[in-house]
Length: 269
Picture 1 (tube, rainbow, N blue to C red):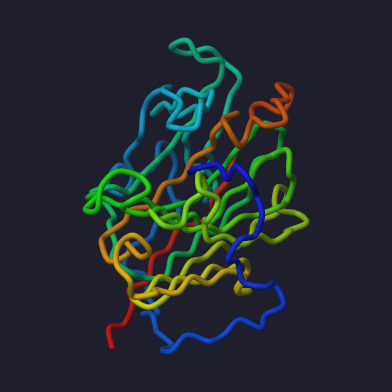
Picture 2: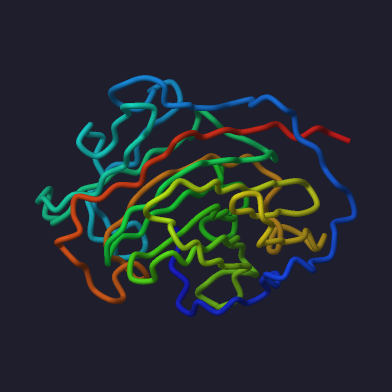
């Protein structure tokens, strides 16, 4: 979850729907190969989710301490809640959770669907995203990053879908990204989706295509997306991007709510 220094829509698709069609139209299986419907209560299913723990800033000068506490990640009434709280822990003034499928759900290509309602409040930085499991091409950003959904609370309802690689990432202002205003992103559930194939990556909100990044065929610096990745769900507080306009402590506690996570296998051609 890396913060764009400039939020310009570099290399993004126009939002008018006039994107050039991919050379192949890849298909995906109808039934998920991996899913969590959150039809239970308590902590997230330990067979599917682990935790990133700590308060080291996570490369973005974030201000929260990530825990494995049920206060920060819990399931009830068919919904996962990742809750950021104003409380002191290990020298940090906020707690939250970052749950991951690493070594429990690792995928090479596929359709990734997450239905979620985002937290409100200046200083919040929720993300639904993917990182490489094995870092085959080296440290970030060499092995890639896929941001299915990012949002910062001071820029209400502006949703970002982004891919980062060694050639295309925010610190050199070349990231592949697109944005869309979703008027009720923090008050209603929306479907965030990425289709990832050997040829291209496409991003959708409520099944509307807003982002496309094609494999240029020039190697891993542009396209490291031929290795397995895993999912991450988190709510950060502050940081280089999320904290640019300060933090409204009256917003806490605030949660990202997730109705389901579903992964569909790509049908090989």
